[in-house]
Image (cartoon, rainbow, N blue to C red; front, side, top):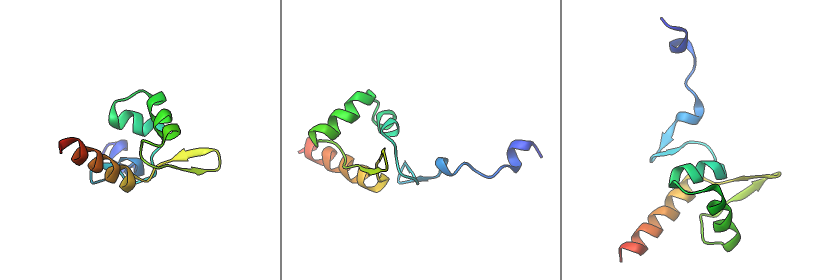
Length: 79
């Protein structure tokens, strides 16, 4: 057995509905939507993106909320 096979799986790799099963960072959102990080911060400033929350000085996003926001945007744009 290789050493990598004996290590526990990375908890950040778990997916639920295509999203990680952990709170997302602004960098995660930028990667997920293939947009610049500054775009994510502008969404927050203008209140046009998914709602986030602070944990101390760190900004985080709930994956379920991000998924709901993306579905809402997709259905609104399809109409």
